[in-house]
Length: 503
Image (cartoon, rainbow, N blue to C red):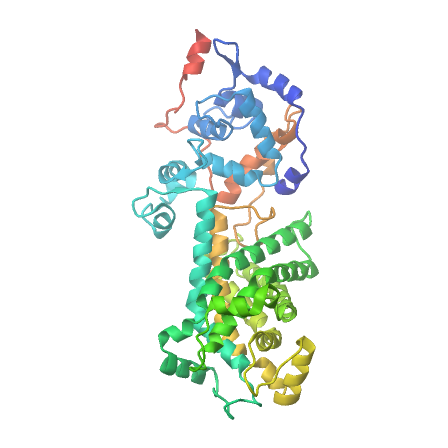
């Protein structure tokens, strides 16, 4: 609800904000400039943490989100800039990042994360393991790395290419099985009895590296392909999500279909090169086939040969996959709405079974259209011609060649992709549309009754300031202590600006 309201929030009049700021700013420097203290901003203006024994550290941490210069005071320009942040759709995530960014440099260090988490109430009850795999992954074994949007994208790309490499041998077997004609074979007989026979022969005659023919185009294409698919799906789901935070099944299917269609611009050229390299190992005579030679032979428009079949495969695949994944994931949520990594992986793998298997006929047709036909093999002029000839010459079962291999490849690959994507979104969210996929996080318990009443002076984005801070606590589990303990002392006592103002 908070996010939907933010999308509709308009900027406040700077002149009106100036009057409000002057009213609450209690510090005046030697040049007559006024500044808000953390107490002025958080307690007096926003009305947060006004209880008698409030925790001063918490007040200072919250004020630090607006204090981008990190000098302990908030200028009018910072006050104005924070109001603009609260007006954007992804304000919740920007505020959360700025809470960790204690230096105002746009980067988060291990020390920043440890400092913030160490002050949460959850950490006081269940201390965080600072030597875990997560810390090593994102900050390095020496904990010297820092986090930024760019580093996030690099990790995401790395995970996609790793998953593609792991399942690539299955993809090669799938392609060869689909390309094998039951009639018109130039050797006069079937080369492979089944997928297992194909794998054995590849290993025997081509070695281990034979399984990885055409891998380079796949690695080049898998990162943008997955990025586009996931981005478009999230974006479309967000647009179809209602005010009650629900989405109709038809809209889920449409969002998935749009995601599948959007990736073809990358997948078709790379797949036609990949497929031709994958089947090249079946013939030991003739010139050596390389990715560059395939591209030269095909030309630019030739790289999109079989694009119609690619659309027929990718659109239904994603239209099936994403709704099944979302509902399977939701069904695995615990009583608090949380879905763990194992459940995310399982949901992704389960969704890949019907999606990968049901679109096999389109994948077979795409493979036949994109492979260069050899002497004596049937040629095809298009999708419909290919479909008719396969039915007439090889029968209905031929359209389902490689279905098992597709499932064994796509199911684990998409399971790994989705669990990686969602876990990274939980920790370092990059907003691709406004809503996170349903069921991937704990269901926040409403704290609207605990929020202070909205004042007439809470104009523009500040109308949602209290709700945004509450949302950061609920969504990211950053529950900062409300009350002062006996050992807590304030970080900010008196800044140079305050001393100047006092003099």
